[in-house]
Length: 119
Image (cartoon, rainbow, N blue to C red):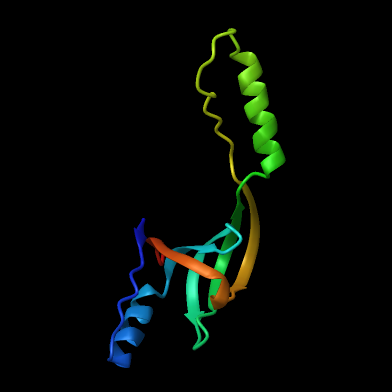
């Protein structure tokens, strides 16, 4: 997975060619509310809105879920000795959305995951 680098260019044709090269690639887009959308890049517009097909939305666990898991881990490993809190690993919540428009104003990161095989 690589970060898509947005290099300022004075040549609009180069920018269009770069976007065309991403068509059909699986992108991971992170938004301002920490959600991630993973899907096939279909198109964009002048407002930086992005359309993805076959998209899955990934969400961070809720703070209450993290706190409960941390408390349970601390309780199970308490030996009466002060130590660093145990590491807690939780899965992200995933759901299938299909075709989505991600508003450009909410996009904070775009990563290229892989090209889609045309088989």
